[in-house]
Length: 320
Image 1 (cartoon, helix red, strand yellow):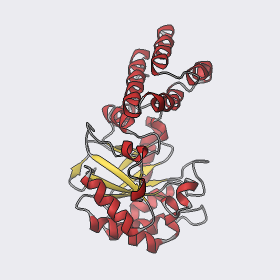
Image 2 (tube, helix red, strand yellow):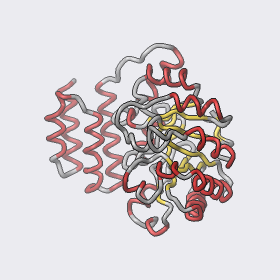
Image 3 (cartoon, helix red, strand yellow):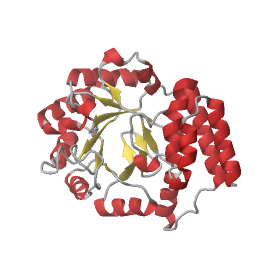
């Protein structure tokens, strides 16, 4: 798949997820085969750019591959300025968020709330595309509620405004993450625009990945929650798409290595206090089976990086 001058090595992209797709997580997914990893969304409001959270999200030093930075907001001028700022910071691609359903984002009329106003969508897209010399991509939902799925309309606007690639989550804003993603709208969007379309939503297995590609005709897949606690899903999907066969499950020793490396990267990125707390949710995703409930409870009570590291080591020693 081609995004502007960038030829991706395969059809798999890591979805931007606030509080999840930081540099530590992105690099793990890239190592396991993802062709592109989109960063956590950054507000277009310059007043928050100097916060610790924003600075950490803007960190791309040592980043592998093409750097795609997602921005969010509802003011065309601020969005254009945010795009320029992030290009100056090293972004290769600017991605515009019109897919986030979170209330705190939507109440500012940003994210997927923008799909209610095609005219404003057009103004924002034109402003951002005109502001930078790098490719601009867009992420949307199928509409703002099931009764108003206007994804095709927004996709056509995006193409006319110079958006070079469009990712579509198969739910409306009202659906949040409930129920099941639907792919009919994504299929219709693909049939109505000539720019690359990326399908997103509920892709959590190699078999589901192949089904979505075949059904929608999409050019690529964007995987979010399916990669939480499972960055190796990209390797599994690539193998299945290429061979039609499933890889053997990841071995315990490899999972231990990945988890410990991930924890160490979190401590280095956020410092021990915040790193320990970020580690809790990631370990909860890595070890999410019912029989691992007690381990998760014990892990979540730990307050130091050394103790977290030691408990994971002990868990896998007993497992092996």
